[in-house]
Amino acid sequence: MENLQKIYEDAYKKEWERRKGTSPIRVVDNSTGQVYENEGNFFLCGFTSLRFWCKGKNRELKRVLAMQGLKTKPAYGGGLRLYMNEIGHKGNGDFEIQKHAYSQVSNYLNGLGYMVYIDSMLD
Image (cartoon, rainbow, N blue to C red; front, side):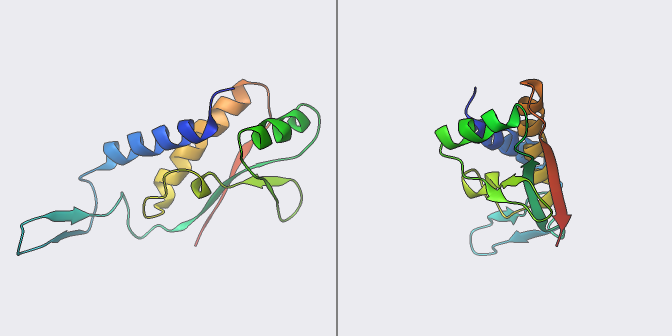
């Protein structure tokens, strides 16, 4: 199994580059001329995680995640959660970019036969 942190970080960085320059807010430092911009849509803040139930093949997934140093947490309503942004690129927490990166990890794991989905909520 590939390193999930790397999949997350690569997807996050790629989406950041794709959205670069589309930010609705830019700040210019008049003394240096440096332009600072936020990631994607500054106003969307939320929480995203991977969620799965520890049944069938997913029992193996919990062990594999532990071997990669990834810790799961109990999810409200059952199952387990994995927060990739605790180990990967944090950025400013842009919700849309995080969702994109999580979807890449989820697609990879689902392709290996695990049943994982994205659980997200706007703040």
